[in-house]
Length: 282
Image 1: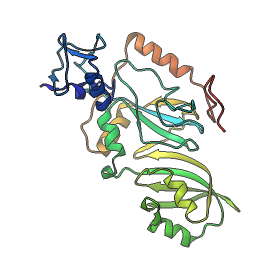
Image 2: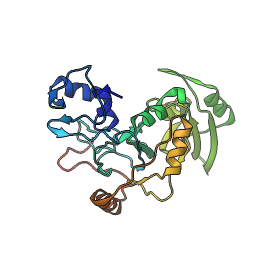
Image 3: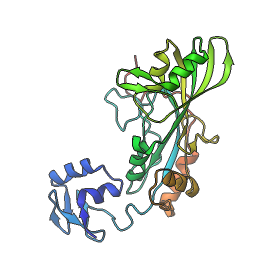
Image 4: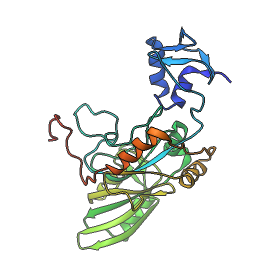
């Protein structure tokens, strides 16, 4: 079966479809020795190259990998940052012929569970509102919280970008002005947890995501480190959003050795420092 070249390149995890389209427009992609143009198609056994480098398409998209990362405060959820701040991609393991795609985002002052996958379809399904995948957060708030306020937060509050609400709010711990709650959202709008509490005159002093869908923040990953999920967990995520199960890719040889070294060398980072040579955050 022949497919559009940008789709095949996206399936490998090398780039998004839009990025692959730009490569084609820039004349960087060839198929069987001929420069590709938008609209061209290719098969998995054609000789597809980017900047002269052959791309292995035979097994592309037939496997998927997922990382669970315990994000520290101070990292931004983007591949690069114009202000030079550290990003969540800085400490992820290298991949061969693939790239990590973040599943949703966490703002710079939020810590906790962030999933990454090599499968664009899985990432898109997990993020799309139609999948109704819930997210759970542990939140420490300052202020008086009563049952009437909790009911308002569950019924819905009008924010600048529309109605928002928690599907569940449960007291977790604390006394006096500082209390911990666990809250659940069905969407991931920008700063939604903070804005919902702030709409009630309550200040959020700590925010940590502890669950995304059926995946809880594993107890064995300290802040600033990651762990690769196993086949059962990946199957559970696939089933959750109703897509075909795929095997996790088995690492062998040098790639496996490099991955294991990176895993052992991970550093625990409660908060992220600035990149070397970058200006400090104000």
